[in-house]
Length: 394
Ligand code: APR
Ligand code: PHB
Image 1: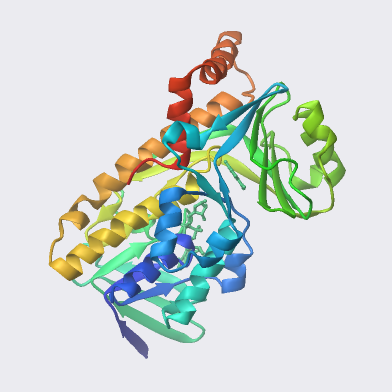
Image 2: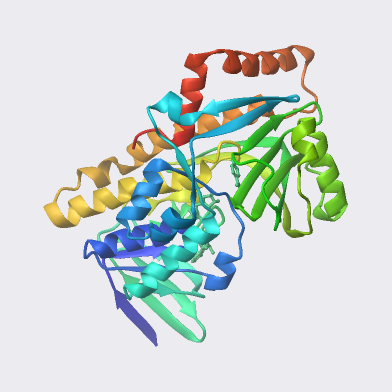
């Protein structure tokens, strides 16, 4: 026997995108269900980025999920670029009329969203298997899944595909409708999380002859560091000691000298990729977040691009249900994609400027060097970097 669930909005995926939309809609009295394939602990076990645009931080507050972020997150009004041993500060606040970013880990943010959903009695169903989308291009879309021995059918007005890059929703859009754009970079990031004091108060993005590195943090006692590695490397190739040694070589001497090291709590390699799927709406199925687009982590746009999709979807849904105005839904794909592509451009630009590209011509290396030299010498270019980093307006 199949159990039937009726709701307004069926959300596939209990990552930050799905949970944030669910919480925002619920606060406006719009009934919804989140269906997540994995357990809550599994979702919270994933270590991801940790820089929130100020507009995203506002959305978290609007979702009544901002208390811990405001208490424990750090406001950063700048970051640093290390150009082969020389440090330059990017004054975010100074170049944007006072804007900043909030450094707060995605894991913590997701935990806050889960807690808020639980407190409001939101429906978040875990371990939903064999998810399938039915009749998304009709007025009666539905989802089906299995949990344990039982099968379920969710009947709803709209389906939200917030199921990440490997989810089912994007794949259920017909091939002749969906256009995919992809760029794969010839390196990955080896990341280490350690219970050590961050080497610097603010983030440091480094361009060096040995490759890129990034010094980031989660709190005053938890650091997150990355180094660019060839795609052929595996985590087993990198002992903690080898990682720390290489990171030191990619930092100015005085910074390297104060680097506090310790055992890694987490160590992983992520390949760098840019990806966009268009359109982000097919009938009554709406894609959001990683389900529709991926960026390389340089510039920290991933989670923020997901949040901007949710901003547009949330307002479109509220206009639809509260005012009977469906313009926002009709314009969702075009509006979301316009901002998504700007984030794609920015993360591609940061990635290209700061990494070491194997097999690049001497000419292209010179261009890459002058791109950074120009940035560091130009108030106009710095302003452009700053306005993108703190987040373009929605
Ligand atoms: N059925 C149900 N849930 C699914 C399915 C499925 N078939 N496929 C995937 N999921 C779940 C995943 O288990 C995951 O928890 O969807 C969720 C998607 O979450 P994320 O991958 O975190 O994607 P999203 O919520 O869009 O988050 C934005 O920004 O910084 C980036 O990649 C980073 O996760 C981050 C993302
Ligand atoms: C992180 O803290 O994990 C982080 C920060 C900034 C980035 C990417 C990752 O650009």
